[in-house]
Every structure is written in C-alpha cells, then in structure tokens.
Amino acid sequence: MNPKYERQMKKGVLEMLVLKLLEREEKYGYQLINELSERSGSLFELKEGTLYPILYRLEDEALVISRWSEPKGKEVSRKYYAITEKGRKTIAELNDLWARFSNNVTRIMEDL
Image (cartoon, rainbow, N blue to C red):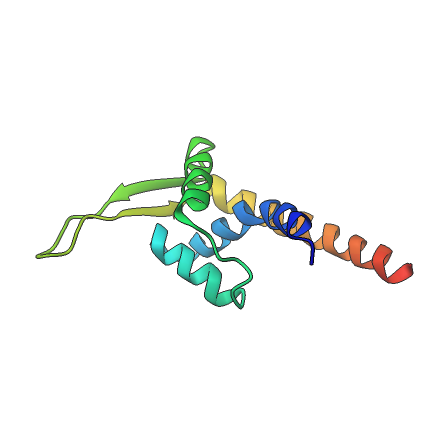
C-alpha cells in the first residue's frame, strides 16, 4: 500500500476513533494509544506527537475535558480525558456520517 494514501485515510478518522474510545470511560493518552493499536490489529500505531494534538483539538472544541489525577505513592500524576455531552452528540453524528460514507465508497469501489 502507498504510505501516503494510508496516512491520509487514517488522518480522517482519528478524531472519531479517539472520541469513540472515550465514550465508555475516561482514559489517559498512553491508554488511548494502546487501545487504538490493540483494537485495530496494529493498523493505528500512534505516537504521542500525533495523539496529543488531536486531544487538544477535541478539548478546544469542548468535545472532551481533561483532569489531572492525584499521584498515589510512586505513581505519577496522569492527565485523563473524558467525553462531554457535546462529544457524545458529535460521536453519534460522526457514526451516522461514517456509515453513509463507507457504504457509498464501498458501493463505488465494488461497482468498478
């Protein structure tokens, strides 16, 4: 596969996937990176330099909020991200859009 096309396709879905992973519970960055990798069969191998700008954009748009944990013992403080009500509405809209998008792309690709 051409890496350029793969990067472009991944870039278009990362915000949606991060929101989806936060839908059930708050997570910190490293958890998100690991879960994206595990659940995608390693298709989405993100570096911190890719994930954190996404989280900052989502926070700027009020789709997620963040909080710092209290360190316990030798544990360091971690920044947790949680989806907001606006984020929940947005992920529902994105899910519908993704379904329409992927169905139509598949229809065109199969038609050729």
